[in-house]
Length: 274
Image (cartoon, rainbow, N blue to C red):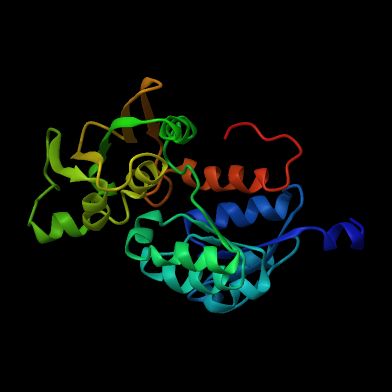
């Protein structure tokens, strides 16, 4: 690679090297057209030293609030409580933030205005869902209703605030149990590690207060199952996806792949999909 070509690359930084962040870092290191991994931020650098030193072009390790200085695109793959400290410095500098913990955006919606004022961008990947391009298209017209039903294995729901606060015992379930029915906004608060998909769906369509969500704990499934039904003036459609959990049972393997696909579009000659 020539120095001139390297200078034209978009620099990408990653906040968090869990099951999602490590896959994205590996893909960037192996090569994505026009992009280069420039920096990472992690809570315990020593824990990730072996992984980072094994990369062909090891990135610099920087504090979270300096990621925007070290990159053009900052990818947030950290616990949702860190979203603001990752996104705010980036968009203030006019950079792009790719947000995986999209549920946390609902409590930090001023970041969108901050990005607009400073020439920054916030991009939400499709993540563990399917068909957000169809929902986006339908929203150009009029969407009458959006409903999502999520079924997850027990391990993927353990520790959710809604379950803990309501004293629900899911450890010994033998049949599916409906845990929750309400809006995407309410779902995001009760299940912050599980329902980023509902918030992404709501932002693509009719918003978090009109998107209806059911959540089931289901001992009969081994995958994270999402079914979406949309009624609009342009189309009626339903979509279903069964995601294989990653090493983190709360997150599907496809979530990291979705971010990688999004990054590939940033400099790709041919882009497919809206």
